Image (tube, rainbow, N blue to C red):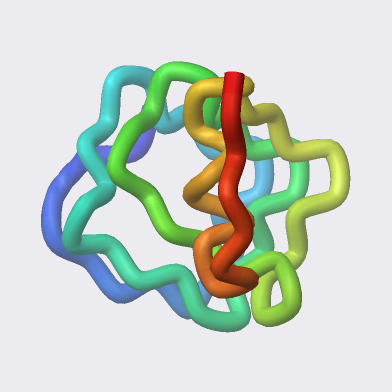
Amino acid sequence: MVKCGKSNFQKNLSSADFTDCDLSQTIFQNTNLEKADFRSAFNYTIDPENNRLKGAKFSLAGISGLLGKYQIKIEQ
């Protein structure tokens, strides 16, 4: 499991487990997040164009953290 907190990741976090992590002050830039588990993480913002996300797991509730830069509205 990854330790939560303010971070700037520029590394390989493939298969990382972000269980119950508050990622509100975390910056992912050119990070390998392939197969990482974000299903119970919250307050994250990840740019899919600048990070590797193949096989990463996200919850429907957190999907806005991937799409924020596109300024689209997600409704349930």
